[in-house]
Amino acid sequence: CGTPEIDDVKLKDCSACKSVRYCGVECQKEHRPQHKRACKKRAAELREEILFKQPESCHLGDCPICCLPLPLDFLSILMPCCCTVICDGCDYANQIRELKEKLDHNCPFCRHPKAKSDEERNRSLIKRVDAKDPAAIRWVGSEAGKGDIDGAFEYWTKAAGLGDVGAHYQLSVVYREGLGVEKDEKREVYHLEEAAIGGHAGARHNLACFECENGRHDRALQHWIIAAKLGYDNSVDTLKDAYRKGYVRKEDFASALRAHQAAVNATKSPHREKAAAAAAAEGFRLNVPI
Image (tube, rainbow, N blue to C red; front, side, top):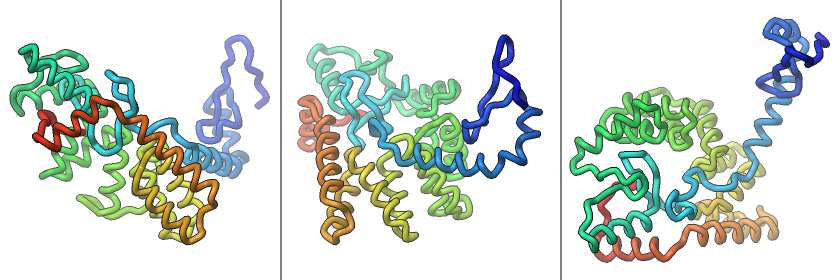
């Protein structure tokens, strides 16, 4: 309508394409017929830019204690009291310190006393669920999924709505396998994309496999390269096979290998190595992995 953004007039962007601004809802509705086609085209372009942007790190982020990236091989712990994810190394170091000093077992992060029973642990998780903690909601959904897929689906949907990347991945599996719902390829891909954008390397790898199965090999290779750079071993193995067959350029393959090794090395520490050795030798693990 030509209204300038001055004084008390604040213009709002089109939520889909971000390329047009409006003075109000009525103005946007009137312009919709002329803008609809260009809006969809630009929104699709923006989605592609976001989808194929290399995430800075995997969806797990860093351990809040040692500040090192959390590994992709599930060697991390979700503390039910605060729903903070810490690495095995920090959990192991804390347990050794408590044993040596004869201290009570507390959460390494928030110092809340550790649950002494499943009932106490579940009460802590429910408190976090009531506080709308997406990690807690996803975790409770995963527990429910062992016997109640409908309940799990409800929890995962809530967690995904709060932006939980892991919940998006779980929902992609639900729609792919038809677990309690009808198989839905469109919804599966949507949740895979949301998880991949959030840095979930496994979701990115699965998305690449989907693209490859549907003949979109260039897109599949881009996804595998991104996942490999996040430290995902399966994607590296796939790229090795693709390179041997001549589907991947040497420079792209080499770049992916270097980034993969750097990502893996960044997750290593002396404490984590000691925790892994203790787990292998003695089964030393008092908590449940995330």
